[in-house]
Length: 132
Image 1 (cartoon, rainbow, N blue to C red):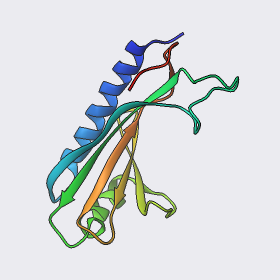
Image 2 (image 1 turned 90 degrees about the vertical axis):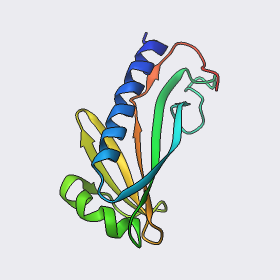
Image 3 (image 1 turned 180 degrees about the vertical axis):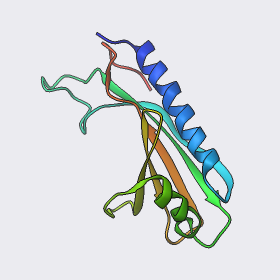
Image 4 (image 1 turned 30 degrees about the vertical axis):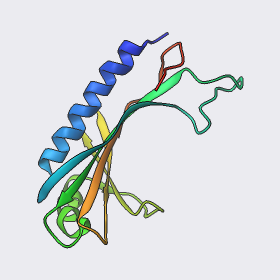
């Protein structure tokens, strides 16, 4: 069984990859940490037996402000060269970008001068429920 230490180690790797990618993005004028926490895997947070899940993934995301009319205008040329565009969904325009063995989602806003970078670890069974 894996432990919280494994999850923490994975989280450090994801944070480093997200921070690296944010540093590579062109035209960024400001950043704001958005999410930095463990979340239960699965939609309901419960395992197949109906008990609370002990599987968690660490999610780390950073919102970025860019110098331009829209996030799409500033970020999309870089993302086209460095990532793979996903089909458009309710969250807007998203690219998958990989650094090392971490794949991140990068969203670009087509109305505001902003975007975001999100990375998540694989699901890790901590053996216990985590608080917070």
